[in-house]
Image (cartoon, rainbow, N blue to C red; front, top):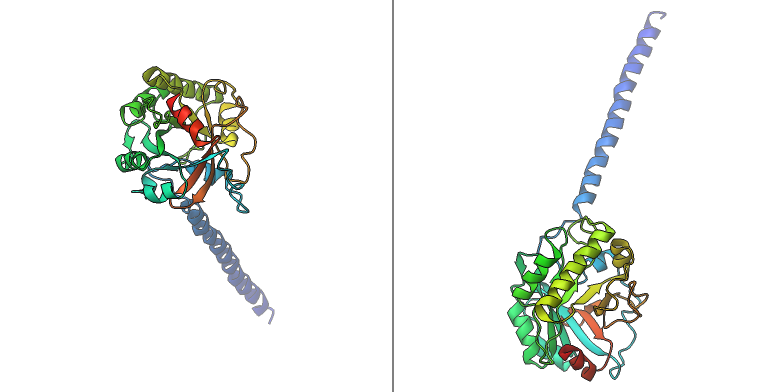
Length: 282
């Protein structure tokens, strides 16, 4: 008996060690697929597929209680913004529903052009809307000057006919990577300045700046450099417009929802239709 007990204890311990080690290994391995799946659940979109508000909605979200206060038609004018995401939009439906203006994505960076631009830009005009074009900025791919030139050369121009809105620069949370496109705050302000200066030199109009207050604060350091020169188009999906980016005391346009009728993105011009046409004609 004296010889059996030590052997029994050794055999018992030898059985316990692999069991504990195996359990620990399995536990560690079981965590790996979960982490991998989590990382893969948020794919990076293809370059060119970004649309106005894409980064804003992902970062800031929306107030699900209500998208906006009821529209006072005598004071504000309903609008929409579209990209290739919407395809061939039903402009007659939007027009009969009270939409008076539209912005259409024309370009992104210096290599992407919206394949639906002709239908969207021309179709909105044909039903009677005041319309304009916008450029989705990617400051990590090329200069502001180069992107302004590409925009103007591919649909982003302006004419004082009372039905063409000035081009808009969509500068917001980056859907492709680093929130501020790898730019410092001063570098971002310089990039925006290069774009708007080049746009005005090419067209004679000041570009509209579309952005979210949260992004502007984070990525420009609350720069007040453009408030007196460029109209503001602010993005906030809530019942009120909220705080404006630094430098602006009022907004020209407000993107208030990403889930409106027919095309999703709906906006409000901060004035009645006659003021909208005056703004377009400058």
